[in-house]
Amino acid sequence: DAGVIQSPRHEVTEMGQEVTLRCKPISGHDYLFWYRQTMMRGLELLIYFNNNVPIDDSGMPEDRFSAKMPNASFSTLKIQPSEPRDSAVYFCASSPTPVGETQYFGPGTRLLVL
Amino acid sequence: GQQLNQSPQSMFIQEGEDVSMNCTSSSIFNTWLWYKQEPGEGPVLLIALYKAGELTSNGRLTAQFGITRKDSFLNISASIPSDVGIYFCAGQGSPGNTGKLIFGQGTTLQVKP
Image 1 (tube, each protein chain N blue to C red):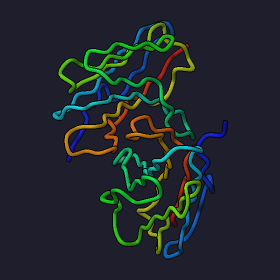
Image 2 (cartoon, chains in turn cyan, orange):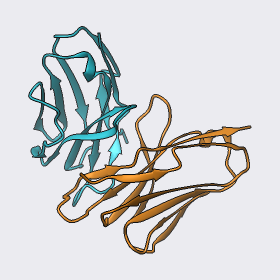
Image 3 (cartoon, rainbow over the protein chains, first blue to last red):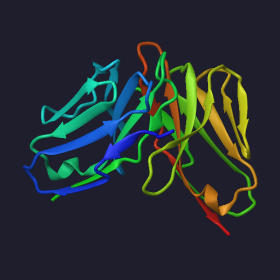
């Protein structure tokens, strides 16, 4: 049974470029979460979806960040334009119903913005 | 915002020793979770706790949901080198907090063979 799949695993880009991170949740999981991890701030929840609908995006740092979930098996997190301070590891996690209490994490995307 | 205080921040122990770490919060939670993260990987769920006072084991790991619902601890018995990693506590389900997990800052564990 495949876990949460994220791509790419590593991304190096230059400041100002658009970055798109992708996630495939575990089949049957109705909740999907995007996190950012840095040494300074630890694990931060950016946004989460329930049945493809964004429920809470209060953790999205600014308008440069956007997330979509067009169907139950795919989500994207986009940063446009990217800045060096966006460098971090971005994790996607999914959870079954009903409340999203036990979340299963993907391997993460390591983003470096030069 | 809500925060979890996790301690200790780091531990360096000898193989075979027991380990204890804990998390405390000013808010009550309905669920406490413990995760382990190894280098280059995402956090992996170790133990989930759903009831105040609950004591749950997973092999050499034992975790408890505090009776006040504001704390939890994780014990690792007879540590081995593969226990190395960062351990995170997470709480979920406090009033006004629907579905979101709040994570502690992590405890970095190093085990000397």
